[in-house]
Amino acid sequence: MMREQPQEEGAEPRISEKDQYGESSDSDDGGGGVNEFKAVFKRYKKRRPWPDFSDVIDIKTSPLLQSRLVFSSPNEISPEKAELAENLGLIHPSEWRVYSFPDRIGLYLLPGLLKKQNSGMWLKRAFSYAKPPNITNLTIHGKDVETDPSLLTKALRWTTLGVEYDWNTKKYPENGRPVPDELFQLGNLISNSLKLGDMRPDATILNYYPPKSALSPHVDKSERSNAPLISMSLGQTAVYLSGALSLSEPPIPLWLSNGDFLIMHGEQRLVYHAIPCIGPKVKPVHFDKDEQSPMISDYLNCSRINFTIRQVNP
Ligand SMILES: O=C(O)CCC(=O)C(=O)O
Ligand SMILES: [Fe+2]
Image 1 (tube, rainbow, N blue to C red):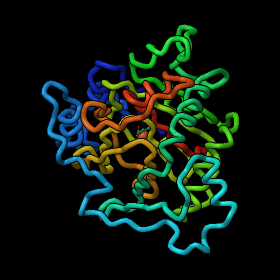
Image 2 (cartoon, rainbow, N blue to C red; image 1 turned 180 degrees about the vertical axis):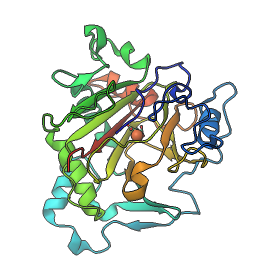
Image 3 (cartoon, helix red, strand yellow; image 1 turned 60 degrees about the vertical axis):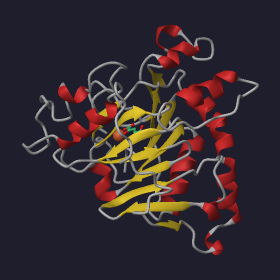
């Protein structure tokens, strides 16, 4: 992966400063033309007034897109696979549907794969990963999200796992600790199920998005393998912009909701993408109060977390 460090809340999109080419990107389209991507990013990032979201594709209701079952025959679903999906908090594999995009070969969306009632379990994991020896800026100043939930509302934060991406050098080191088992299994199960190869995840980046945050346009191209990039969304819905190899191409906007998985593979592995806005006010998902830990439901009701499961080394 090679991208700018996620911007802080309230900051201007980092795209106007430095991009992965190390030059001012105000006019950068990756090829010397108009930056169509940036114009769309800015439009959806605006809050006063809120933009018109009617063009954002809702995969479940879009008449433009066709879906198919991931496993068309029950014989393809072994008891072990079904059990693994259950243990990971996913719906039964016989219900998995995959959406593909006619002009984006290698981009797949599997909506609602994670059962809503298991969102809290993954949220707790997302916070527990943000502890030493993993590297994070979520618990800066020695504070902990359990004791100081206000940490979660301030700015976009991240945690790196496994072979940990270095935001300064924009490179991955040669090796790292193994990623937690559940992330390895999740990435491997989805890659195999979509017949994208036997992925061996060795890295994950988590982004913690408070309501007003955004993630600038970037390409993830520092990984050294051709394995897919598997992303899981938790909490509030976001607008996701799926672009092309150049910033001169306008992106398509999609809603990404709790439990959705987006997979980038092949040519789509190297396209520009961004999150211009998180949508509690726009397209809220409601989570019932978690009696044991109200912080969990409060968080899911206002913020978003994204996991990107990656394979850095071939
Ligand atoms: O939050 C998302 O859906 C995208 C995250 C992303 O692009 C990244 O972590 O590289
Ligand atoms: Fe990315």
